[in-house]
Amino acid sequence: MRFLAFIAVIITGALLIYATVDMPNWGDPNSPANIHVSPRYIEKTIEETATPNAVTSVVADYRGYDTMGETTVIFTAGIVCILLLRRHKNDRQT
Amino acid sequence: MEFIIGKFNYWVYIILMMIGFYAMIAKSNLVKKLVGMNIFQTAIILFFISIGSKKGVTIPIIQEGAGDAVNQAVNSARYMNPLPHVLMLTAIVVMVSTFGVALALIIMIFRKYKTLEEDEILESLRSGEEN
Amino acid sequence: MIGRLDNVVIQTVCRLLIPPIQLFALYVIAHGHYSPGGGFQGGCILGASFILMVIAYDIKEAKRMMSEKVNTILSSLGVIIYSGIGVVCLILSANYLDYGILNKILPVTIAEARALGIFGVEVGVGITVMAVMVSIFLNLASGGEHGETEE
Image 1 (tube, rainbow over the protein chains, first blue to last red):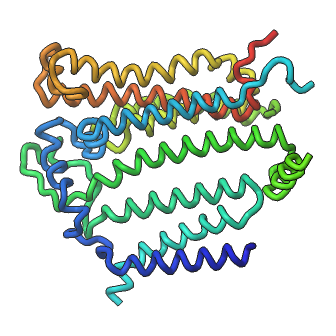
Image 2: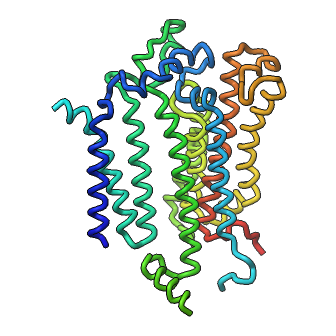
Image 3: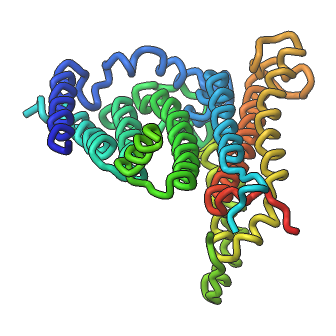
């Protein structure tokens, strides 16, 4: 069982490393992730939101709807932990 | 040689991901599987953060906002990409939430079957079906 | 499940350290505009200060201070603050979560209104994260007896 798991992990790792040949180099300023919409956020964050921290202005203003969904996710996790671990009075262990 | 320097960060994070993946499928204790899932998620978060770095840049807090460089034009090539950091904030919160719910489920499994080994739980499930 | 730890050194050091840790957490939430920080980071530090109190003292002290009712009220209060700011922007005839319209009721410019909106939602997120961190820890550490009142 462990030998089969090891073979599966080696094959998956080899496929993933083979897929990184086409990806952009580390630290490339012209990769598609760095020229799409991030320069617009960095250049306009002071004049539109008066916030020098670009990460806070993106997470709370430009992408504020996603942060609302994430707050709902952590609220749901807290409620689920309360509900799953309740005990009823008749099967409490002595 | 340039090929290795340009890609070795992806290889390191893929090795970390595979360590977590092996722990998830090969260990038989439920808590060890959960630790493997945590390693896997951490490796994915680090992989995304490494995509957003550029050569010779500083953190994305704009220095033209306050101090002696006020009201100058902002050059976006001096700052690193803020977008992967934003997406990974959400990913870290989701990681903590799934870890908390998974631990609560493990406590419930322990209350019912009195063990945390996967093969003993499967045996008691099969003998419970045949009865 | 966590017993009482009667060590004088740990109790004294924790009693000295917990208020500065909470003050630092509020500093991190409030300075999210100018330095690394924000709602999630400050909320986690604030939750960690309550968990430190459980490690130093008995778990019953923490349950007395943050009972289950207080935790559920605080965690929903954060989500209500976030959605409430969005609904206020809707009432003032702008898009949902479009903070620029808040300069009609506050005497600031449009950019500063957006900065105030960002600060409001970060406070809401910090309250929710703090309450959920403490609630998950107390539930897992006491095995589900967090909600039971003392008889």
